[in-house]
Image (tube, rainbow, N blue to C red; front, top):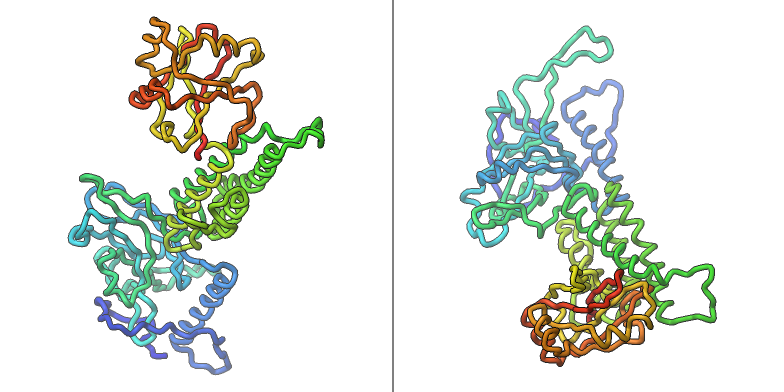
Amino acid sequence: MTSQLLHSGSGGWPLHSETRIQPVNVKQPLSWYQGLFLQPQHFQYSSLHQEQLVIQYMREVCPYPWGVAQMQLDDQALAGEVVELRYIKAIFEDGTLVEFPDNVHLTARSIEDNWHDTTQPLNVYLGLAKLDPAASNVTEVPSLASAAAIHSRFVGLNEGAEMKDLNEGNTTNPVKTLRYALGIYFEPELADLHDKQLLPLFALEKQGEDIQVSQQFIPPVLTLSGSSLLLSIIKNIRDELVGRSKQLENYKSTPTSRAAEFNPVAERYRVALRMLAHYTPSLQHWYENPAVHPADVYSHLRSLVGELSTFSHRVNLLGEATGDGPSLPRYQHNDLAISFNTARELIVSLLDELTVSPELLVRFNRDDANRFSAELPGEFFARQHDLYLVLETGATYADWVESFEGFAKLGASGEIDIYNQRAIPGIPFQAYPDQPSGLERRPKVSYFTLNRDSDKWKVVESQGQITLLWDDAPEDLVVEMVIVRG
């Protein structure tokens, strides 16, 4: 090891070659003995040896001990086509802990001339020079303010800062410290950065004249708290599980339940409810306390997909599609969006096979004239789905069903008055006596099917609006329309 292992007076952009810089081997403890003439290399080796012990421990207990801990981007600078970090705390893959501005020198960079195709996202990276045992690793400058981009691993001041003796307190001496010389780099530059280790930060997108951080990329993070986008995905999955569990609450076992009343459909939903009760609290806890590694959360989601697969023929217990359709990918630490977005989509898809998705249910609005109206999304007109009109009331079924079937009219909102004035029947409907598969059992609820071959239903399709007119509707009546994906 040469005397210039960690010291240099200049730091130009290093020449690149295809030869990768070999890491310094500092795994062997240093041999200390009496009379040793200490040189800088002894202290450098000792410092590196202690660092590698910590890094090795981190790698043994966590397979991905690197990523962003916290990051704050200057939005005002970004509007001016400049990438500037106001704060970042991260660990590189080699275990180097950096925190700007505490132990880092970092300058802003203009996007201009680096984004050649603005129709494609621009990936942005944080770079740090690798420790080179055969070259200088420190650039000394008179002041950090006068230092532009530094391409060595470290940057230090020519003159050290005065530091007091913390024990005695009556003497001071100049102490030189080093800062990590970080740089901001863009995707087109990566081919020339063989001497750098890179940490992906975010991707930029052009929205008209505005530059925005893409919502389709999540960098490697140390915990969920390192990415608000990742945390929002976890919240979304948690909300889905909570919503579906509420739909199944009517299937809870009660002290008055009897084995003689066994219902295979009800038992299926009880099993599903127990499964949701197993996974949802953990997601709630991690959302409230996001100091958890994303790999651990993804493992939890993979287990959830495995259990949900027992209710589906489309996916096996490993999340692999048995036919066409998405499969659950392996954990990808350097692009968490791919892993977690796919997991979310697959979980929602599997939940839709178990219960009805909230977005597939529309509640009608009631006015003073006992009109119940709603706007129907286009998915309600897909013929491969089962469609039901849902009536919920505390009144006894026998007390109102004759009035409903004889006098209520259902049709397009723009045509219902004509039907009423001319005594024209509305869309034909009939009671559905069974519990629709895929829908939760709710008390005081009755289901009706519609004749979707009717010309009047085709008018609803063209208008996208539907109205139920029923003069004698119970005061507490709630009207909904729901589809179950076929």
